[in-house]
Length: 306
Image (tube, rainbow, N blue to C red; front, top):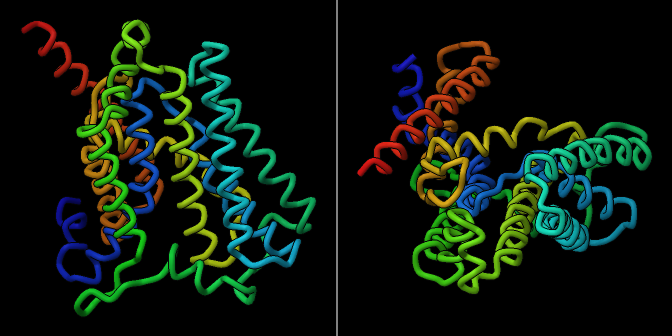
């Protein structure tokens, strides 16, 4: 298996494929990592990506608008979903597990039901021949030549998002707030940290990255299946945990989440090269998540004894 996983690095084209697979996980993992550092997590992140793609595709097609109009409507919807998750959480004090599980189920049902109602099928209509499609695709789903290979633009967006998130965490007051609310929310509130606004903002950040990845999925294939995205949220959380984010909050980094995403991206391609059944990927994710959680717990306990 080791040699199969290493196979993608033997030529530039294969490495580009690994980076692309990593970026589609990593874009979401950036925001999920920030949210987990803030002491929460989002089980609706996977289906929220599909919701944004369906919104943009169906709105543009049904109302015969420029694709960019659908893109902006999808952004508004995604940010609203994130805001509602955060607002319900801070107002009710319910665990994020329950709040976002409810959102996950509702979005999953809405994705399928509304798509069937509007299109008569389980996928959005093709928007490939609509105004604005080419320019939107250039932003979200184009390829950029680098030497002898073409690299998906999502790789560069992913690296940019990681850089911005790292700067926010390490160089800004907002970063201090994120660590504070994740470490001890009551103490943070006592010293003037806007805990509620910070948590809502983190959920809206997840909504933003869900929108961005949704636009990539839609514009890369010009249509999207309504059942996509289920269980992807577990991959995002697992990548963040593998990258060092604690499930209990207060510790982690965007760079660590990027490393976790890269590990999973490399593994997806390694399994293909090894000719393994793709179902083994889910086993690997589960085993890696358990191992990373136990390792994080061990490191934290060792640090507490010092």
